[in-house]
Amino acid sequence: MYALGKQIIINMLIVTSPTALQEIQQNHSHFFETMVKVVVDIQRKMIALDADLNADLEQSLLEEGSIEVEFTSLINIRPAQNNKSMEIKDPKVQKKVTEIVKKLLIK
Image (cartoon, rainbow, N blue to C red; front, side, top):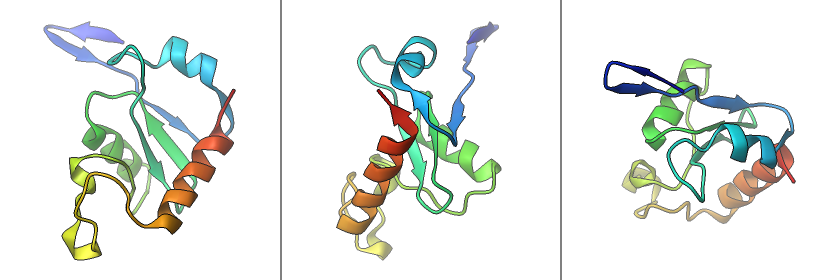
């Protein structure tokens, strides 16, 4: 993290292999004391984390070649996909997200 004028620049992390939660808590929790925002690409099995906005995380995955990503956020409201809440309602998608997070973010 570094400051550029009044704008704070954060180095988001894209996780594609198992990474210790301790490292993430120490090095990638710039915005919140008790949590780190993550966005999961379930097709490519990767996670972007550590940004103020979920949209920034989504954008970083899209720039890496992701097609569509899933997360709990206002952006997750997708009436056309029958998802009208901030949470992922599809149990299959929930399971995939959980599996990826457990595989890549290890204790």
